[in-house]
Length: 465
Image 1 (tube, rainbow, N blue to C red):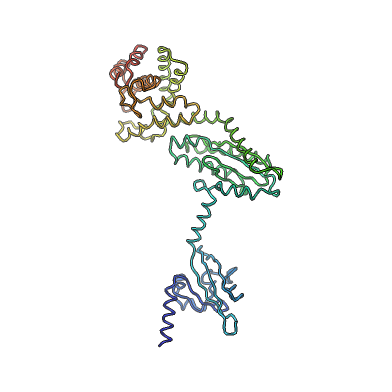
Image 2 (image 1 turned 60 degrees about the horizontal axis):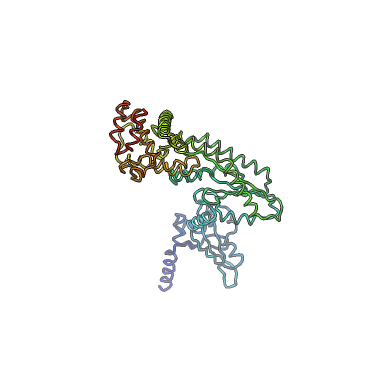
């Protein structure tokens, strides 16, 4: 009875363990398997015993390579290791050799625990340690380690390319960081597509990228840079309107050819050339951005080239009659084309809605001067009119938006423009509002003189129409 109780207790203990406990003879036949092992195979003990473990778990006809159980029986010492089964699960195996009284191996006890989730977690940590989470490229820390590792004579010539994504701040400020993230991921895909498998591409930080090209001479890296530019152009043509501005990256490269040259100096040379190229290419990129923004504005709103040209004519007349400075005149003309540029960030279904807007929809529309201001602030060409974009919906009595300015607190250019813009909108009409006659429009402007508009400027405008 005592032996029976001991056996019962022993079995109960083994069967409550989460780990699989398997006893094997010296020929790798299973003698015993606890409950966890039976559950793992979905078999009872009688269908497990006398079977080879590698056949049941690994579907093999021969033992696994580097099997810890075989190693422990060969060395007569405890052995452990990791094994992956065909279903993709990972197991930690620890094997204890069983020796008889003559110190001969007669079998082994295998204790196995599934560590799949642990391995996945470790792989994720390892990945995040060396990769940029957003783009999937290597991160700066990994790049710096690789730069040291590859800085050997055997890797010469070694080339470096630095890249700066154009327009990221504009997209973040105008459309939100989600759109900016899309732009970053797109350029990362372009870089991966344009480079070779052995090249190391990393996100240096923010909008900057860096690439190491081992055993790559200057002429080859020049061709790769050309390929990156060409792929950006193809992307912009094929993926129509995927991004609010064109995908563009400024590049600079440098090559280490002599073993005594310092890699940090090569990196600095590539960076300097990148910034120089960014300046050289800046005008072309800015022109393409303005064109894209204008096209997006016309597509998403009721703005049109005709509307803008009519405003331009009227503000020019106002500038003449008021003898404004050349700077103010130029600002009014430029404002004619970009005053509502912030509307590109408002959903198209709101901006093109044929009926009157709801209160919530109008609140969204009222954010466009601030969005336009942020866009203008990031643009060399638009920066001079940023303040006017922000204030062209302010009212003379202080009830306008976004800052609630009143009277002369509102810039003169914005006060002039508000009158001209309102006149053009009323006389042209909108799908939700009929066009007014010239007389009706002038009457409406006079009605709101001293409320919405500068009364003195309304009088001047009425006399030149």
